[in-house]
Length: 148
Image 1 (tube, one colour):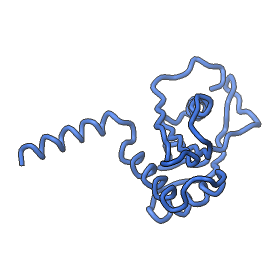
Image 2: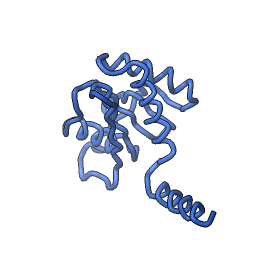
Image 3: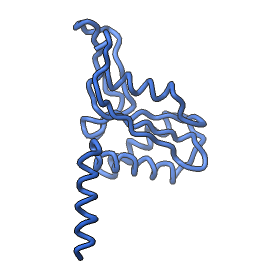
C-alpha cells in the first residue's frame, strides 16, 4: 500500500508540472476515439465535425472556430484568427489531416498562442497512419514580437 501511495504522489507532482494535464488527457482521448472510429483519409472539416460530436458526448467544453482578436502595437486588427477549437476555455486545439506534422504546423500554433495569450496548444494530425499523431505545445515565455 505504501508503494501505491508513493506512485500516486509522484503522479500528482508530475501532473502539477504539466500544464493542464487532466484537460489535455481528455482532449487527446477524444481525438483517439475519433481516429479509432473513422481512421485517416478524410479532410480536416470531417474530423472537426466528428470531434464536436465527441466533445459533446464526453462533456468536454469546447467552442469551434471562435473568433479571436489580434492586436498590433496595442490596436485591434481587422483580421482575426479562428482556431479549430478552444477547449476548457484555455486550450487551443489545431486539427491537421496531413501525412505528418512538420515545423510549419508547430510554428503556426506557437504564433496562435503568442497572439491569443493562451498558454497551451494541442496539434492533432488525423492524416498520419497507422495512428493518430499529436503534440502538446506550451507557451513558456512571451515572444519578443510586435504582434501582441
